[in-house]
Amino acid sequence: MHNAIYNAYFGFSENPFNISPDPEFLYRSPQHEEALANLIYGVRSRKGFIVLTGEVGTGKTTMLECLRDYLEIQRVEFAFIFNSRLTPDQFFEMMAYDFDLQCDRKSKPEILVALNTLLIQQAERGRTSVLIVDEAHNLDWEVLEEIRLLGNLETRQGKLLQIILAGQPELDRKLDAANLRQLKQRIVLRCSLNPLSPEEVAAYIETRLARAGMPNQSVFPPDVLEEVYKRSRGIPRLINLLCDNLLVTAFAMEQRSATVDMLDEVCEDLRLEWPGSRDRRGRSRYGLSEEDYPETSIPIRNE
Image 1 (cartoon, helix red, strand yellow):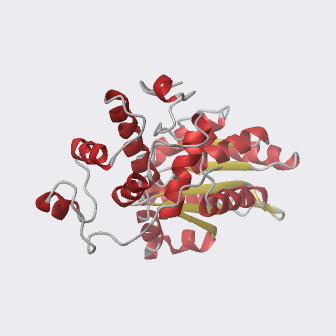
Image 2 (tube, one colour; image 1 turned 180 degrees about the vertical axis):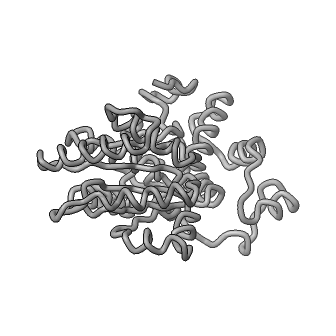
């Protein structure tokens, strides 16, 4: 378990803003709930191809980790391909390794025979099997075509292999290509993750702090929450990065709450750019103008 240097100071049991995709810290916004429900529904209903897309840092891998937990609980066989920069031969070898297929893992024909045997055995037990490919926007055309052909493994009752492709928005654009129209037509479910709204950013931060041992957060006042939203643009990974560094700064300065001054210092150290940041730095360190950012208040929930 990662121990942040400020945990004892703020009374945390663990780091609230670790950037690792930990399902225990999942903020269940409506869109995240919907995405996870669609992934589980697609697997249980044997829909075949499912696509999950979202900008960098919006929580796609966390969704996949939650799905993996579900599959393990349900004892569903699955393979997780996390490195998508693979040749077709490497892809089959990785898949065989993750499914633990008992065959020559360097022979495509043997892998396909062993995979088909596994899928049929699972189907006879009333179970399905799942192939998860993260960072799928990096897949070569040849690998995507091989994945499409895996979708042909089916019975009259449904698909034997449920295939989940997760990636950045470039994946959607790649699937729109004319040479992949056969794959696009087989996609039954699509899920997307968008940046959080101002209200969701506040709830996201409160949820993570509560999970770490601070049920009534007092570290981030409203003006800081508003600035965190603007500078992170609602992207969870950036929110974690900013809040973690703010807590380190507050700890170093022996303060119990963060300030916009601290946030300015953190953003400068991280070389973070956001809409209006250059104008802001050019005029004065802390001055804002109405045209830089919309007027948006961030609610604080006391639960």
